[in-house]
Amino acid sequence: MTVIRQQDFIDSIEDALQYISYYHPLDFIQALEKAYHKEQNKAAKDAIAQILINSRMSAEGHRPICQDTGIVTCFVKVGMDVKWDKTDLTVQQMVDEGTRRAYNNPDNPLRASIVADPAGARKNTRDNTPAVVHIDLVPGAEVEVMIAAKGGGSENKTKMAMLNPSDSIVDWVLESLPKMGAGWCPPGMLGIGIGGTAEKAAVLAKESLMDPVDIQQLIDKGAETAEEKLRLELYEKVNNLGIGAQGLGGLTTVVDIKIKSVPTHAASLPVVMIPNCAATRHVHFHLDGSGPADIKPPKLEDWPEVTWELGSNVRRVNLDTVTPEEVQSWQAGETVLLSGKMLTGRDAAHKRIADRLNKGEGLPEGVDLKNKFIYYVGPVDAVGDEVVGPAGPTTATRMDKFTEMMLSQTGLLGMIGKSERGDATVESIKQHKAVYLMAVGGAAYLVSKAIKKARVVAFEDLGMEAIYEFEVEDMPVTVAVDSQGNNVHKQGPAIWKVKIEEMATAQ
Image (tube, rainbow, N blue to C red; front, side, top):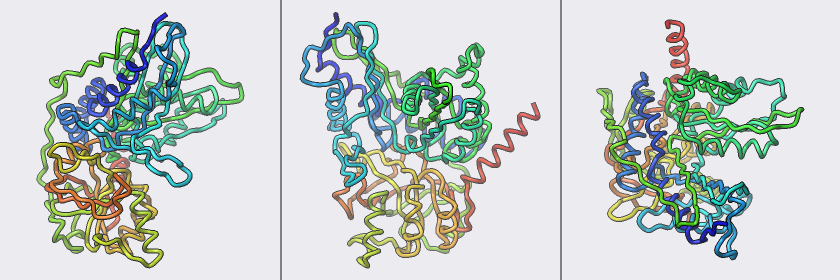
């Protein structure tokens, strides 16, 4: 019988969560590097370059890859021949304690994103607990842990279906994926769970994302099982959709397809698809009673040397003096470098603004949005001499319900976020001659380096969802929706789907 110390388990959870906050899995980075060299769409190639540069910076600086440091998901497999040194804490409580310590680490504080009372007050727990923990009793005398920090943008794109046994899983995936938009920050991975019951399929899909990137090895050896054949078919057909990095259109939408399945009822075919974003974060370790896990850091020389070079069509913009007339000259697909002051605001802040405007109270003191830009972000707390912690964009579609109000009642000139906007929102942007700019999701630490000053101006009690004023210098963004309603998230994938079909025909 093996005795596992509670403290060793807690320490290992804490170390693992700190580790994955700034280290991508090396196999994922290697897959992204291949995608970078393969990519032919300049906009998508630039996005992958920023993700790779951000990854290296995070590894060097030990700061989060993404401002959304995720909801902790932990698979714990406890050997039947394991005994704990104490029994005052459950496995759930031990994972939560490790999570609490990791997210409150003073050297690398991680953003607390978990809210209690989700159907009511949605109050932040302030320490990112509780974690989502799946516990299995298995043969053996070890404890095996697979732990991930899952961003909300990708988690929110989860799809579930109870298919008929004769239905095609491939057809369902190819129909569902384009509807997910780009809020899951491709290129990433798709985890697919098949069988069991609905909740079992969801757990299988999530667990599959803990596996290493090995699609190239599977291509080289060839498929031998139904699961492997399905992986290869989906890998090819999903990438042929042309969605591309950040939904801009391109050759690589996924770097791998992962599948786990279990037997199911003869009348059922439950299927769940969960994407992993460009900030894929997970690690796997074992405890054998000899002490906490020894999680060895990767070598920085294993990161690719990628540079991001600005093209000739870059437009530099002073946010403090920009006019509506200038904004109307911007074209979809252009690269813009922003300098000057902008305000931030995401879900909770938009809701409060809407409530105030509905009551006739106006905007809060210190918030003037006339001819200004708002950045959809919830940054990580700063450490040391940082102005702000990692501060990448959040999914813009969640703010769609507020966009018409913001444009018509506040004089807002433009918005900055990630992923696409809905059709009604694009029409509203066009009607008000506004603009929507896209920053790269998965490049939060890189983006934060463009922020030179930061201060809270309203709703301080909302924590990371407060309204900040950022002063930026050469913050890179892409014009995703211009004042004429031209939309790169529709145009790009459509163009590249056709190009990929033409390339296949020419071979």
